[in-house]
View (cartoon, protein in one colour):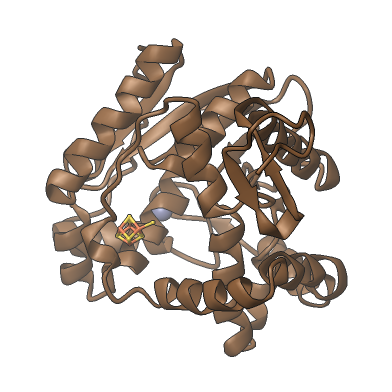
Length: 313
Ligand code: Q46
Ligand code: ZN
C-alpha cells in the first residue's frame, strides 16, 4: 500500500477517499480537511479568539492541536464532571497536553465550583446522566466563552458523531434538533458562535492522528455512556460504511446541502424570543434557565451564578 501523494509506504487506508497516506501526508490530509470545513462553513475568522471544549479524549485534543498548528488563538476549557476515576484521568490528559504545548487551559470543576457531580446531579434532577451532562456542558462552555471574551466555542464532534446524531434525529424527524444540527451555529445575544471543525474527519482518522502525532489521550469510554443510543447508531452506520464506503459522509453532507435549511428558520425565531435567566443571565425561554433549575435541584439549594476560573499553565 503506497501513499497516494508521495508514493512512500502508507500507514493508513481511507476507503471513503479511495486513498492511502504516509504519516506526513496523513497529517496534511487532516489539516486540509479542517481548513476546508472552517472555510466552507465560515467557522472562524482570523483574529477571533477560540475556546476549545477539551475532554482529554482523542477528538478534542487533536482539534486543539490542529487549530494551534493552523495559527488560531485557541485556548482550552476542561470541565471536571465528577465521574470518578474517569474524570481524574481525563483531566490529567488535558493538563499534560496543555503543558506540553504551552497552551492555556481553563478549568471548571462541577463538584467544586457548581456544587454537584453528574452521577448525583442526574439522580437528583431525575434526568439521564448524558442529558444532565450535555445540558451542563452546553451551558458552562457558553458561559465561559462569553465571560472570558471568546468569540467561538469549538467542539471535537467528528463525522461519525454527527452522522449518528443525524440518524437519531431523522428517525424521529425531530425538527427542532434537525434545525440546530449544522457545523456552525452563529453568535447571537448571549451566545458565542459554536463550531465543529472536525466534521469532515472520522473517528478512526482522529485516533490515527493522535497516535502519529504522539498525543496521549484517555482511551477509556465514559462509564456513563453504557446504553447510550448514539453508540448503537454508530455501529449501524459503521456496518453500512463497510459495505458502502462514503455512505456516512454522503448522508451527513447531503443533509447540510439539501435539507438543513428547511428546519433552520424555527431555530432563529426561537433564539430571537429568548430572555435573560433570572439567576445567571444566560438566554432562556422564560424565568430560570434549565441549567440553573438543574443546579438548584441537584444541590437542593438556590442556584448561584458560576464564575469561570482561569488556569494558565
Ligand atoms: S461524558 Fe457526559 Fe458523554 Fe459521559 S455522561 Fe454521557 S455525555 S457519556 S460525551
Ligand atoms: Zn441560569
